[in-house]
Image 1 (cartoon, rainbow, N blue to C red):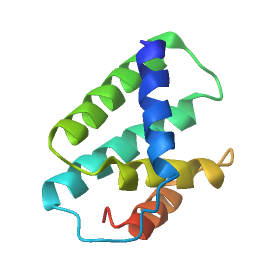
Image 2: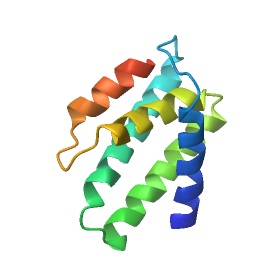
Image 3: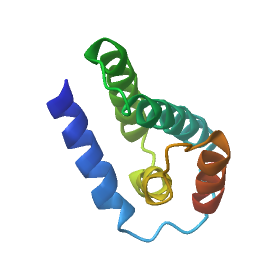
Length: 109
């Protein structure tokens, strides 16, 4: 499970390096992206005291959401950029407000 997550994370962060200016994103992609970012934020919150029994379901959900996102023909660059944005400003108090700001920057909201 962790290996799948690492591969998904690597793909997202690789794509995050691409320019992801706010753009018109199809509604299905925006919703799927918001769901994935929510899981990403939840996972970051749990990493402070990692327990496999807590993190594994989050990773599974994140893997499913990012897989559906990509399979739906959604451009992965904005999703990767939003996740990267959260990581670049993450603190012990990483919040929903930061996630919303990051999603706004790349057009996922």
